[in-house]
Length: 412
Image (cartoon, rainbow, N blue to C red; front, side, top):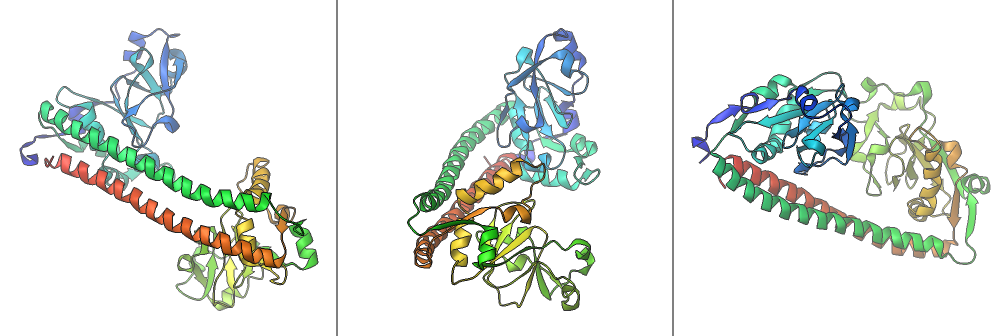
């Protein structure tokens, strides 16, 4: 049982950051070694198998050294919290180099590398480590003292191997279940996207195709403005607990504007903002940072102020129905236009001037209503399925964590 197991500090049970002189002793300067950048270190992948090789002379100076069987752990945020971790395997000449943000563990004879891997993969370890991080925002690292002093249970090696065998089988089964669930989730999204695409590629007679600028000139779209407030942008301390809602792209979720995520301004402060004032039934488009989400605003508020990441499209319902426009703006035909703009820029945004150049496909009103009826049903079904699959993925993650807690509590 767990209470009978001795514990060691990680700094005593492992050699941490083995010296680079080992590599120099084993491989010539022009000899090939494996190279593993941070983006190639996996999450929930037991083995880290590099696909790149480089001459030793190119990497020995500034990169972190590790060898076959060493355990690698990312120490910088958010990679540490995300669980980037793995056992080095299949290395060229049994030597590897990688990110300077790796912690390298080499277990001593009392500790199995697989036992160490599973122990470091626990959520509780990541939570405790994250609480002990230091450094500037965006560059925080888990503290060296925390890692070296962190205790690990050390049962006899046969017991470690027995439990690792159980965890291996359970992890494989959970990984298969997660893969199947992820594939089903993708298929649910693809079904809606496929039907959406077919609507606009097989369009009928009398369907107009015109730019947003032309729709505005005709009065089919009555308003199109973003929340660009310039020097009037509210300061953080000006937001209060209730008042006039102020929403950003982060409030758009599953085709809805989640008002529970809104911030608020006092009416007197909100009155100073003249642009980007949305109303009920406006179609909202996230055009900055998180580009692409679309939602219809449903609100009883007289006005809702948009942040700098949102644009509203105000439809004239005699010609364009908000439900139809929202579905069109989710289609590949519309997405392709803003993705093309983004490819030509280093900024993740779609300016309002560019939006007015985008083409929109507008069928007669009766057909818009038919399209809404079909797509609303598919969209709602897709949302239900997505919720089911997301819950299943969360349950599988919880199951894995429960197994790990049982394993290191001596209950397997």
